[in-house]
Image 1: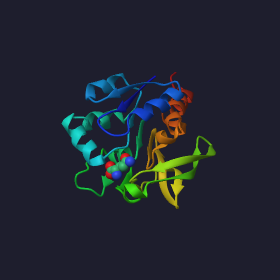
Image 2: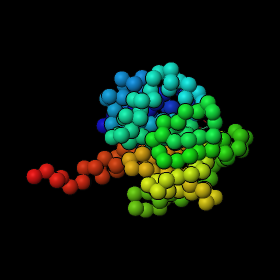
Image 3: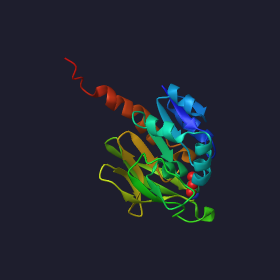
Image 4: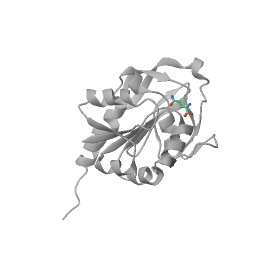
Length: 199
Ligand code: GLN
């Protein structure tokens, strides 16, 4: 299995360490033709306005939207903003991969970044993790197909829709691999265990 880490800008390297901890091979990707080799993609945190600019420059919008139709994407922080269908900033063009609307920087400025305990419901059980929020976005609206994996102060901050996962925080900064595992390993197992209807 090969997972791509979108490496246009932002917090890229630490996702590699998380994937390594799961024994998953990965590539740093920047261009649309590199998506062909991949079984999944990570859109890391950074700055969603800059990501928008660079994704437009590298003509990645349509390719990532197509990719999302049958391969899982994990987006963290600015990555989640990019996966949403609507954000509150005119310089952000989201991909519309997940049925959520987000409010950028809703947890406040850089100085209000924090780490806190967060219980997560994932793969049939609850796990308590440490979650790092850095100028994090809030999910303000979500559709009925969106599964909430975790809430902070009663607001969703980790969600799953179909095979995709989006997080307001940065699991890679605390070496948390449960979301990468769910998106890229468990999801694959789910697909494999589906009955075949072939005659
Ligand atoms: N505030 C950033 C944005 O709007 C996201 C911050 C992050 O990814 N840590 O894109």
